[in-house]
Image (cartoon, rainbow, N blue to C red; front, side):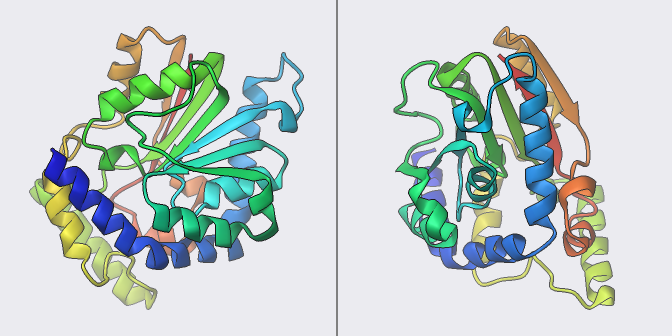
Length: 258
C-alpha cells in the first residue's frame, strides 16, 4: 500500500499542470455556474433553520487539486479551507484562484490523516477523490471527526476505473470513446502517462466496489444522522463534452449528515 501511495503522489504531482488546464476550462465554462448553484443550494438548505450567513460557514475542500471547488465556493462568500497532498496541485490552485487566493486557506494535508482538531468545519466537500484513496474507510472516519455536530458532507465521485476489471463496463467505456470521436470533441481519457494511473487503480481497494452503496454502508456503520445518494449528478453540473466523455461512468453525489 505504501508503494501505491508513493506512486499516487508522484502521478498527481506530475499531472498538476495538465489537470489545472481542466479546472481552467471549468472556470471559463458552464461549470462555473452549475457547480456553485448546486453546492450553494445544498449547503444553505442544510443550514436553513440556523439562518447562517455564508461567511460564517466553514467549508473544507478535501483533495482540492487545482482549486475549482474552493474557488467557486469562496467566490460566493464561504469561509474556505482547501487541502491536497500534492504541493504542485496547491501551487496551481493558488494561481487559478488569483485574487481569491487571499480568502482561501490552502494547506498540504493527507486526506486519511488530517491535522485539524475535532469538529472544526461545518461543511466538507470532496470531488473525485475517494476512488483514489488507499484507505478510504480511514479517510471517512477522519472527515466525520473534523466535521461539527450537525455538519454536512458532500462527496462527488464515480466508479472511474471499473472498466479495467468488468467486460461489460469495458465495452461501454469503448462505446463512449467512439461517440467522443464521432462528436469531434476532446477525449478526456487520452494523455501522456495516463496508463500509469490504470496500473495504480488496479491496486486501489475501491476499484470494482459497488458504489455509492459501499460508501453508504460505511457511513451508516459510523452511526451518522443520515445518508442520501443521488445517481448521475453529472447531468446537472457537467458540460456537454463531459456528458459525452463520461456517459458510461456517471458521477454520483453522497450527502452525509453527522
